Structure formats: C-alpha cells, structure tokens
Length: 121
Image 1: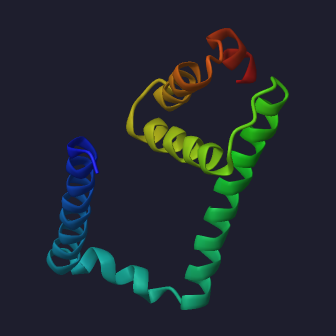
Image 2: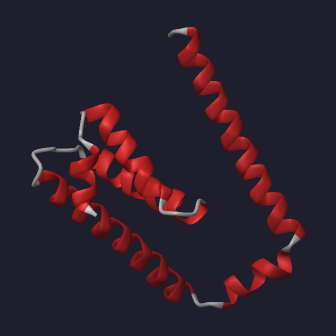
Image 3: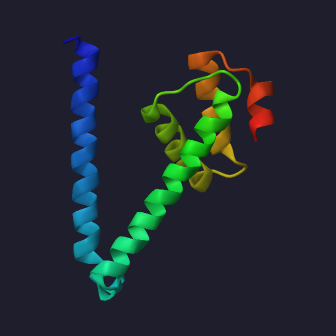
C-alpha cells in the first residue's frame, strides 16, 4: 500500500471517529432537542426515512437517464454519489453550486462539455 493511500485511509477513520464523537456529544448535551424525534412512532419514522431515500434514488436515476441521452453511461455508484453530492452542496452553498460541482466532476472525469451539462438542467 502506498504511503498516500495509507494516509488517506487513516484520515478517513479519524474523520469518522470525530463525526461519531461529535454526534454522541451533541445528543448528550442537547437531549431536549433530540427527544421529540423519539416521540414519533417507529413506523412513522421508518416511512419518513424510506420515502426520503426513495426520492433520492429516483432523482439520481432520473439524472442517469438524462445523461445516457448524451452517450455517457455512469456506474450506479457514481450517479447515486453525484446526486448526493449535488444535494449536499446545494443545501450548503448558495447559487446552485452543487450543480456546478457535478458539472466539474463530469468535465474532469468524462470530458463532458459544460454546454451539454447546462442543456441537462
């Protein structure tokens, strides 16, 4: 294993541990904010999570179908991941920069022209 790959793996594990520790700390310190979530029944919570997941998968699949019209076939991991990244950056940053991140990824990895990407939107 190369040193760079090993460093990336270690950083991922450290980051995961920090996120988990932060989540545990938040739940313990702000229990009054988290407690109402558990007031919802387990079935209702499962239905909400399943519907959110179904919407995410359908949106990603729709993106895959449109991109195929331009002759670009993406593996399922990529079209699902690109959809998730687009939604994440879209909520985190203003001006639809999630879509810009997806366009940049397609341009760098697949030489997909920006003009074609804009026509997808």
